[in-house]
Image (cartoon, rainbow, N blue to C red; front, top):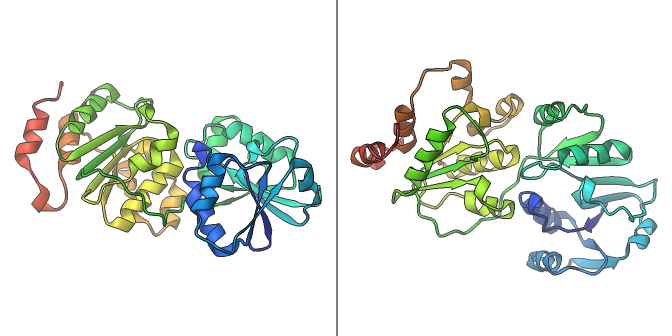
Length: 310
């Protein structure tokens, strides 16, 4: 990246929350000058001020001045968020981002990518995940992209103290979803548990809310946002926290499962290859049981089971 001109634009976009740690690291290690489009907004300024790099040069450019730049340009924003009035020299190679923590604008991003042949994107969806998403949108992949797995070296501080964390999306209508989401709510009321519903949280808060506490021993997920799913699974892998998918509908791609050193990306495979009959009661026991026998609390499990509406 050292030979790229680096442009910051609306870096605090909520969909960029996972990308920001990657961008921060990139600036700290490889970037000596940042270009900002127009006057800095308060959020962009706070982001830049948070980067502890004394030698960093900041240059403010108006849209028409960008045409003076040559060579390779990295615009740290999503492909569809590049300003329309940005007159970039056609000889320039442009690198920007695709995806986002919820990938909600993927169809628009795709169209922008294929309409601009000089654009290459960094995607937080890998090859088969991106292909699947595009197939669901009846689109065909016809652009250059490189997969960058969600990066997290930054430590997020929270005041949570749960031993069991459940992250789910009530908009995901899985089998027995009404009952299991009721169960999640009941478990959330227990002293050593925390259950969060992504459907009820602002996207900008997802990352902070999904970070397990220092006391956490187990994380259960039941959602289908791939970048966030990979981020949480890898965080648990690094911190040696037990990690499980509640259902394989929220699993990661087979390509990622086979290529990564993170065993959490593949622990859904046995259930997918050898599906077993189960019950809500068995699922609850499994959720509340922690591998370390020291944490096993039969009385707590029985008490919780007795409150479940079967």
